[in-house]
Amino acid sequence: MEQNLIILIFLAVIFVTIYKPEISFPIILNINIFRAIPYVNYLDPRYGYYNENDVLLGAILPILCFLIITIKVFKKKKILYKVDNFDFFMIALSLIMLLSLLISPKISLSFNYFGIFIFLAAPFYFVTKLYLSNVEDRYKSLKIIITSIVFFAIVFSIVTLYLYNIAKYPYVRMTFPGVYPIPFCLFLSLSLLIFIIYYLKPKMKVGFSRRTKLLFSIPIFAIIIFSIIKTNTRGPVFSVLLTFVLLAFIFLKIKFNFKIILVSFFTLLAGAVVLFIFFDINDIASRFINLMPENKNADSISSRIDTYIDSIRIFINKPFGISVGTFKEYLLGLDLNHRIDPYSHNLFLELLSSFGIFGLLLGLLLIFLCFNEFKFLVKNQKKIFSDPYFF
Image 1 (tube, rainbow, N blue to C red):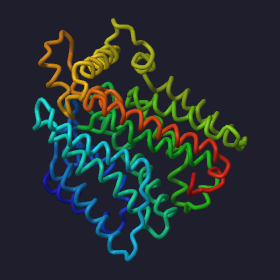
Image 2 (image 1 turned 30 degrees about the vertical axis):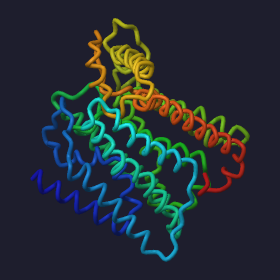
Image 3 (image 1 turned 120 degrees about the horizontal axis):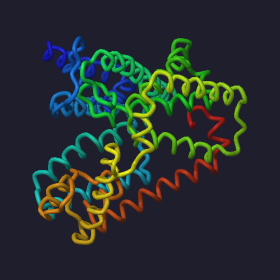
Image 4 (image 1 turned 120 degrees about the vertical axis):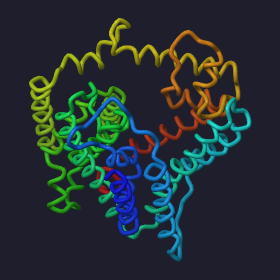
């Protein structure tokens, strides 16, 4: 049965990629969740494990999808692709990662990491941009991508809530069985941001069919928020809150519809009531608020601080870095008296420890690009807010 489901999912995603690439992008983006589908016992779900690597669904399938989409684009007579600063960042990162293999303490680990980046991570960026640059109706394609993300998020939310409810020994942090809670919560958080933008931007609703508008209804919105809270995962939640703050700054000059603000207020109020009635609020709050060392939920905080310090230590000792995928291997050789994590838990510190001085330059470039985008959005907010596609 398991093998049949694996083949069925593989063929289904290939079929979708051939006839509707827009739907395959959200699938590939969340392939770690989709590849877990065949391994779940839907009558007696088990927790306490995470799925092992799946070469067919986790690697071969995305690579085939990228190839199919690229071939579809190159069938056109004229190919459009405008190189920008983010392309430069991705190319620079790839080249520096390749050169870092020469100084890796364990080249097999670094080469494996480099292979994953080159064949799975980088193509997602370049192929998505290539496709959207050459599609006939970008607005329509984006609408399909957006609605697909929300559709899959609500399906996985409902199924996961059901499985979590009937499981005998569930995690404290809800997730789809076999999937690590952080990427699962990130998936739901992405759909939540799309919801916020949908309600923030009334003109977007005009382009959606009646069936699609039902997908963006308040009950669906509530289920996704409910699921995010149940995941009890700090990082994505803090990221979403920070994004709300940035949105407020970006669209500071825009006068919002009073009805939208009123509906949002009562939705949050209703959500707060549900939170206090149906959840163990102390258990959730302890992971977000109580970060004292004696609290078990603070363990991840203290270990991350150690990891941040370790990243700086590597940068000082190895000014050109230790390459990628070798963070734990290198630190084990130093015989440190604390728990050693396999990575830095921070994008910029990972660039710093992996590539040293070149990683520092890449980090500064990335910060510059992000601030540059932010400045552009603030400067052109009225124009952006009046154009559904641009928004």
